[in-house]
Amino acid sequence: RPQRYLSTMGCAGSTLRSGASFEDSRLAAVEDSRFHEVGHHAQFDEGGRFKQLPPANDDAKLLVADHPSLGVIRLDYDYPPALGDVDHPGSFYYDVFYRVVPGLTFELCQSGELPDDVKQRFIDAITWLDEQGVAGITGDCGFFMYFQALARSVTSKPVFMSSLCQLPAVVCAYAADEQIALFTANGESLKPMRELIKKECGVDPDDTRFVIVGCEDVPGFEAVANGDRVDVDSVVPHLVRLAEDTVAKHAGTAKPIRAILFECTELPPYSDAVRAATRLPVFDSITCCNSMLASLMDNPRFGVNNWHLSWDGAHTTHRFGDNVPPHLKGKLVNREHPENVARWNANLAERSSFSSAQQESIGRGSREL
Image (cartoon, rainbow, N blue to C red):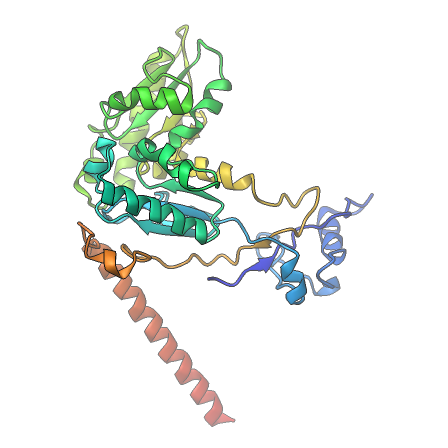
């Protein structure tokens, strides 16, 4: 696992000193740390944040918890994920552990029914993620909502298999005559899930306060259904236009749209653009994961600090099929996408080239000495 570090953003008992600048007070907070004697050696990155410092000793490590990480159940299906997609680890500011369920294809997930062998693999995958110490578990497809209850029965960790898990909180935030737009890859896809959503979320997607918006006709978004790389830059203006038109259609009526929720896990790459264009809150699978994990993270601005290790910023590497037991790899229906294979090989070559150059530099330095 990646090396982890103690959080040094603040510590218990430190307060903002009267007349002192914010930076001085932050430095004082680090100086007060029980685990570090930083003093004038404290260093900051370009954003003014404290650089991570290692625990002073092994005893210090025992006093703190791991930094929260996310577990993701993956379909037996691979594609080139865009930044913002759940399957792209760079979408998160914490570590992510992935586990593919062999045989659990998109079509099977969409059906909501699992044969016994695939069901057991799903259970084993949840158990494996739990054993990695993840703080919460999600899925890389909105249809995993069908298996929310099954996943909960296997672990005591919070389970949020779909961005729809946020719906109760979003609904509570607005009046009954204010509408929420639910964007999905296909406008018809939520209909079979109506009873499930009512049971799990306590809301009825057919309620008049919800506006279901399908993205199946958005130019370029058909790549999602084809399993190809989505050209995010080309899709952005079309997705934004769809959001603007949807909001405008209800503007000035007795039931204006006040919030947007993206159900599809491949929609978050467009969330910021839609927020900027509509000035409305946009909830998606990333905000769902972030809010859940934030509930298990230290807030360095107040209270007890340094109670969990901070993350070193290096995501655990993952390829399609990694972490699947050897005896189950033959059960994988799909294979790694060629574009992902090419990218992995290119990264390996780059690292190998860098390592060779580094070794040559070291050797040249030794010869000079």
